[in-house]
View 1 (cartoon, rainbow, N blue to C red):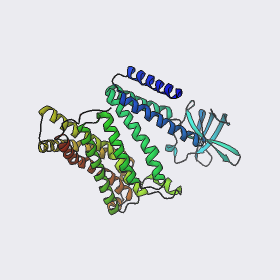
View 2: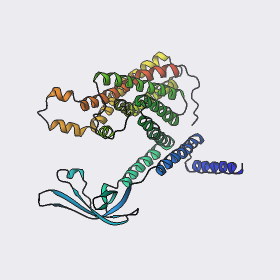
View 3: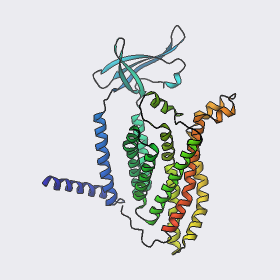
View 4: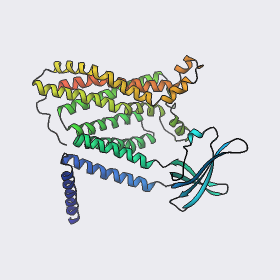
Length: 390
């Protein structure tokens, strides 16, 4: 009993310390953050201890590229292993002829990730990748700091909701798909849960939050239906993505590759759909606030007019995001001018990319009338859905 009392006192002390340092937060947000951090830490620790660490870290001492007598390009790298039983200096020799673009030019002092494997002459250590974790952590920290500085309480809530969404994808969605469960159904559930958590954290439980949640879920469901229908019509297999090839040849049974494609479309469009829904519901809330009692019909028509302006730019945002990720594909097409148009237009990876952009954009378009209708009914008839619980 005393231990429980002491733990509660420590928790209260921690919460008060956070509230003193960050006065723009409130108790509900801090409680949610601390509980999520504890849950995420326990999950990640159990994963780390259950996984076998086969990789080593090291530092490059010397590197040299040369051409052998046959005219083939090789790279010799001497490096120092920093951890594990193989600590000390080692060297590796890798053929890079014709694929030098795949091997970043290392220089002395660069940190690298290494792997030890059994070779013909015993244990061999090879360079796998440059160590990028420090740079990745730095850019994530920069993003987090700027988000908190500019958004203050809402920035913290947005960061927390992003962490919750990431946790749900990694520790709920991915294991479920790996067990052979329906990826699209899980994607809809994860998107709905992420929408609820994100909007409630950012805006609290208000009439505009309820309208935004319903509008987002409506847009996501319509996007899922469109993806399913046209994916079936196009006879897609879901195996056009390069990463899927590794899953196919890894002989992992029970995976639904087409479902994974549909799930990726839904999750990829969630942010843009949620943005449209929240913008429209906020506009309806301000309209009601400024003009007092406003008819549902007037709110609906006003939101549809606003939505027409929003969808033009938001659809471009999503399409350009997919286009930016497919620049290498466009370059490949450009470098093959003799390719027959009929063949090009019917390739699965082309059809899949078109479906990604189109289904996601249709989800954005669908969010306009669903949010407008939800906001007109909820905000137009609301008298007190303005209390925030976070």
